[in-house]
Image 1 (spheres, rainbow, N blue to C red):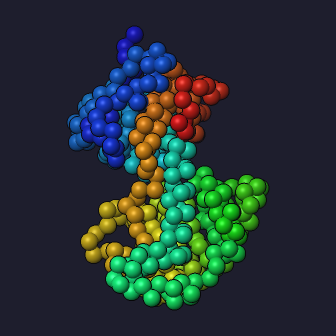
Image 2 (cartoon, one colour):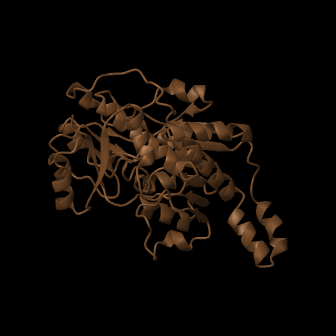
Image 3 (spheres, rainbow, N blue to C red):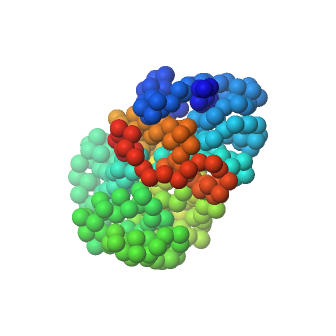
Length: 349
C-alpha cells in the first residue's frame, strides 16, 4: 500500500521547536499509518507540482488559494495548526469536498489569560505607572489612579461569545464584573449559564466599561466594528482585542482613541501585522500592544503539532476530523462519522 503522503510548504511557521515533524507523526504512528510529511517549495507553481497527488495538505506559511486547492487531485484534508483559517480559501476547499481543519480549542486558556492581563493593565494604567516611577515622578502615580473607579461592579461586554470569551468570563467573574454579550449565532442559554446577560451589539458598545472583541476571522466579520460603534462607547471605556485585527475598522479605532470617544485600548492583534512604522497606534500612550502573542506558551508548538497529527491520522483512516470548519463537505466526502477516541493524548495536552 502506498504511503499516506502529506505535503507542506518548506520552513516552520511561528515555531520554536525547530525542524522536523516528530510531534505530528506521533498519532499517525500510533494508528499504524504508513505516512510521510514532505516539504515542498513555497512558490505557487512549484508547490502545486509537488502537491498535486498529495493525500493531505499541512497548511502553513503561504496562502492556500483556489488556484492551489483546485489543482489537488487526491487531497482528503487540509489541516492547519492554528485557530484562524483565513490563510485557506475555505470556499474553494468546500467546493472540492475537502475538509479544512484547525485547532480551535488548544490555546483557549492562554488567550483568555492574555485578555485578562490586558484588561487589568489598561484599567490600572500599568504602563503609565511604570513610566512614572522610572522617570522619578513617584508622586504622580497615586493622583492618576484616584481618577479610576473600582473594578468591582464595572461591566465587561463581549462581541461574540465563543470559547475564548467564555474562558475570559470565568476569569472575570471573581473580580466582580457584570457581563453582557452579543452573539447572534449562539443560544442565549449558553451565555446565561456562564453568568453573562445577552445583549444587542449597540447595548454592548454603549453600556460596557470594557468591550472585548472576539469575532472570528470570517468574511462577514471583516470591518465589523466601525466608527458608528466606537462613537457609542463611554468616554471612560476600554477596548480589548485578542481575536483578529481585521474584524475592526482600525482607522475608526484610531480616531476613537484620538477623539476621546473611549479612554484606552489593549490590542494583541492589528489590521496589518506587523504594523507599518507610521501606524498611529504605536505612538499612543493610551494603548497597550502585544505582537499577536496571546496564544503563546511553552506548550504551544507541542500541542498544536500533535493536534494536527491527530486530525491527519483520523482522515487517513477515513474518519471524520475533530475540528472541521466546513462541515458541509460531510455530505459529499466518504469520511465516516466517528466517536472520539483517546489516541494517547487529548487535544488539549
